[in-house]
Image (cartoon, rainbow, N blue to C red; front, side):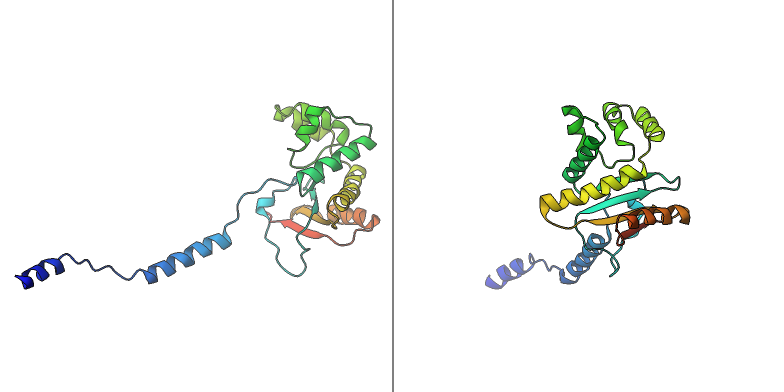
Length: 207
């Protein structure tokens, strides 16, 4: 009777395979995708950042507060600062120098613009017409960001970052690969006139 019960019990034992090798393979796959996946981020200039190669060599600047100057194939500039607070304060200071006054609603919208690519004197009209993308685009084409305001934004942003977080800021150039060399060299010459000789070059791959 005892042997019969033992046989019945033994017939219900289920043998499971060793899952350790499978767990190791799954772990390696997860690590591979975690390292190589690049999530889409907010645009920071008039050149698509998502198409940029990742720079990780010794020539890259340390990760820190960064002012980004965009230059497209038409020679149009854009400006942004890492951190919406830094960028908003910078734009408001440059606007004050141009006697441009923002309403409270417009100031709140400043925290939500990705980058500046138009003359600051036209910015209030752009902020008012944010619901109409076509009108905003037309204003940007008619009143592009000029070199003088670009340099003013750059210099003021460095002071804003230094004052608020007591850290140096770095300059990045976001350049389309099809932009002509004279336009790029002209931008570099502009920066050198302000004593800026070090920058992180982010080159967009040509399609």
